[in-house]
Image (cartoon, rainbow, N blue to C red; front, side, top):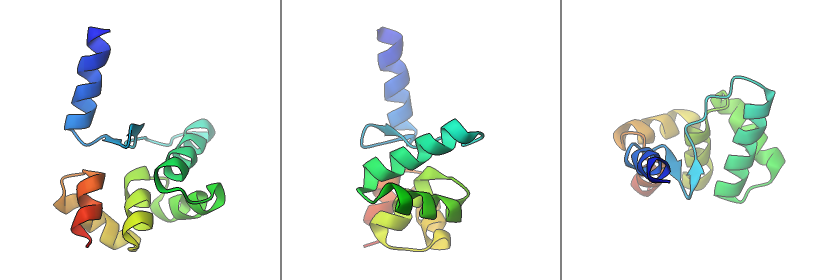
Length: 97
């Protein structure tokens, strides 16, 4: 239980979590791509199909997909916002305004 708490705290500290969702997923197979769709769907409240469309534009990278949807920006702007915020999704979305 303690190891779980430590690993969770580490993931939050390094910007790998957004709204209790692990957003730093490396989609290397079908199952992980489906997980990415579900994460984007849950984080942004868009349809599952729209989540898939945006993920196709990002090469199945969850962080920029979430930023694209919630900040209403394109992929290059989302990447720039994430770089400026050191990978933190919430901060990237906030910086877009």
